[in-house]
Amino acid sequence: MKTNKIALVMTLTAGLLGSYAVAIPHTFTGNLTDSMCTKKHMMPGHTDAECTRECVKSGAHYVLVSGTKVLTVTGDQKRFNGLAGQNVNISGELKGDTIAVESITLAK
Image (cartoon, rainbow, N blue to C red; front, side, top):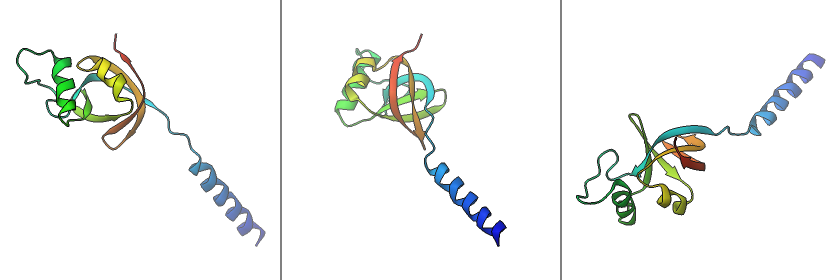
């Protein structure tokens, strides 16, 4: 009986500690672009940055193209505007194919 109580307490404690686990941010590197154009921008006479900003104004979402992956990014749109069309490092939590951006900087 005492062994069962100890096992129950240990199981409950492990469950509670697991629910307080902190999400560890990951860093991703790639091109900050838009969901409409992704890898190939289609506005003749415009830079990648200009095309990205125009597509976002038209309803597209900011995405990070990293290798073959296209990941939606969420966070401060003003920061994304300033880095649109450029190679960036993004730190944040990945859930499915969406990164909740904690920080974004130009890649070196």
